[in-house]
Length: 439
Ligand SMILES: Cc1cc2nc3c(=O)[nH]c(=O)nc-3n(C[C@H](O)[C@H](O)[C@H](O)COP(=O)(O)OP(=O)(O)OC[C@H]3O[C@@H](n4cnc5c(N)ncnc54)[C@H](O)[C@@H]3O)c2cc1C
Image (cartoon, rainbow, N blue to C red):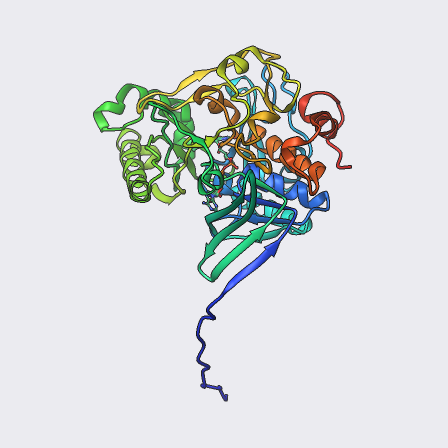
């Protein structure tokens, strides 16, 4: 065999910036950003989707969440609340055996999904919609002209990228785009909102677990004995992944600071807390966990940190009253789920038939004319956000943001006619019984 062993010498060119131009630039590829990108691409728009992580999917695929909440209404006969991409996901993942319904919990339907199947679905849908995906790219700087965002500069391992767009969508979860642009953002004034370090424990004796009463018994035992084991959180959300010997463990509460050192500490602290939870499981349920191992830790799960200053702040009063806004663009019936104490979770469920809405104004940045937010960084007070941040409404907001950008075309997204937007997404706000149709 002959091998050419010669090498070439290269040096980085002085001006090494990759310039991208598009109609819509979206930062964040989680439930909200991926939905926005797929929808905008399908509408024929040139889309660049930027994410700092190495692969798309955000927390939906990275943080070992593995269940969709907020897709259905509450009550004895829950109905789908978000159509289009959400409906396709349910159809396709169910057909592939990668989704299962969890009926009855929280008085609604929760959907288990197989993580890798969701990630591949998103990747295929992005490619099919012609979206330019830019992963491993952290937003570094935003160039503004008055109230208009002109260019986003991002850094990757492989060089700098500049993205020029008509409309920008901040789906970063932490309002990272608005923050980098120097625009107003909001943080809880005094509350700490905790995230969780989720993970998978495998080699669980599932039959032995069923014999003692299943995950419910684990929850009961956590409530009774958490303190004696040094567990920060005194409740638990655990379940066996369908057809496996794996247990998804959501038993920790970690602070999720937005400074570089704090964010790094959060990862190690999350793993430490997870290990304490694992030790608890092994000690309390030796027959179930004798051979068990910590299979994997997810990325730290971050619930609520920083959000935009929108034109309107969705309030807990709006959520409880089910206020039907003139510019409603997404809806949800998931309860108020605030993680503002290390030990317990504040849960406030709603009665059958209750639905609450997200107004478009909560997605429009107050200081800019071509910047929308979608997902867990829209403008809502801490209690209201703790409901609408689940993935059903995040997808609905992404879809709405894409249509808003499409309607705006080269004009300002802040000025669009919201009636036109609502006609396009009628199914997602309960104005039509048919599925969302792309014009
Ligand atoms: C532990 C936990 C359990 C949960 N359980 C459920 C559940 O069972 N069901 C449910 O529906 N919801 C659940 N939620 C809520 C839900 O998962 C999130 O609120 C939702 O996924 C948020 O989606 P998003 O698209 O807004 O943001 P994210 O999924 O957070 O995506 C944001 C993306 O932006 C990227 N990004 C951020 N900053 C930058 C930057 N500067 N440059 C480039 N990219 C950047 C990130 O890499 C990330 O991919 C849970 C949340 C947590 C933390």
